Length: 582
Image (cartoon, rainbow, N blue to C red):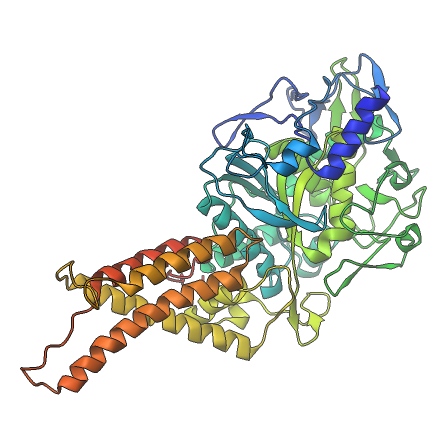
């Protein structure tokens, strides 16, 4: 690859503006590779007695060699050249309504009807305009639960953040293609299966059902698909072989596969700023959210021999003293030339599944990736290394991370033993709705303290909202003359609603500024409350005197309040009936 081409690629990653070629889609589910997407085909599977022995054809044919732009290693590939895409200047100066900075030209990727959204991008560490690759379509991948136990209210802050982000995108006119993974094999799952004497399938399906019941209770809009790790073993094996071909993966003597951290330029500096010494085994890494992650440790708990202390595990070789037969796979990858390559009996490391599933369901480059701030390192840094190392394309253009939920001064977590499940912390329907409101009305990047006082305040706010909603329904259902205006035929309420609805839309488009959005919501509610109090006071003052004329309600103004509350609830999602716990 010419030096100038390589430098353009690196510059584009830095600016988050490379328009990488992505698969074309016919509908939300059908995957149709474009001319710039290298494909693989599955040959007739050879199934063993466990049903997991799959043979794949590699994504990449190998007719010639060239330099991979995301590593110094040589690799074999038949991928066509990258699309150069828009320059950094054209990306940074364009807005989501399609106008450039001088309004002289249009951004072909952004329809004029879409409103501008800015997000704090962990990759650039700044708030920047969000510009998807193929507007109005937005590809969004989010980290899901490890289904060995019930998710806790700290976990659900992340899922509610995904929900608000997706609702805001939809409100602003985008079509969101959302994929959220389910981790259904890891050390914790295996240990619990052994402890309870149940199968992997029995345990993980039980907690999957609980997870989806909780999503429904919180009124969270579902993703298009929730792929399981165990259903995507073939894709993970293929990604390992792609990494090996690019000089970024190796197999240890005992059979595990590892990622060559030292050979991946920029590792540990994309989402966090790490000194190499911090990556030594046992060092803690500050992710910027008031917590730390162990720098050299994989999420799974046992380690095996590896060449570099910083290298992380891609595939864990079978260990008879620890592993189970229902949690072991023996996949293979086949090249177009017919050569079959087995990676060895074992199971995936924690990080591998997300790279494999994002590529399978959304393509090599995605628009948005979201997760808790504690996942920045090592998980998300490892995802970037894996995906860009295998695909030789930018992995994700915008990273969104939410803050912790704290109990006292500590992050809520299962490992600390200070976690509360949703139904344990919120036993009533009012509590569940209040928790949703508490989270969605907060600034998602800041820590959130979960206390009885905070939940009580949220319940009080919801009671006020519910009361006004009922009063609006009663007043408007009785009908009346549409000319019922206050003060000489002009409605102050309508003017308030128009102003605050505009403020609400500015707020949600400014990095999901939900506290400001909530302020606009309650300004509108207050205008309705004042109107009901005005008429009630006049009725009381008349004291039944037939000669006193009680002024009518401003029905047009109240109707505008009702419409505004419904419109805002497209984002807040707080007016709903909580299903009974199953």
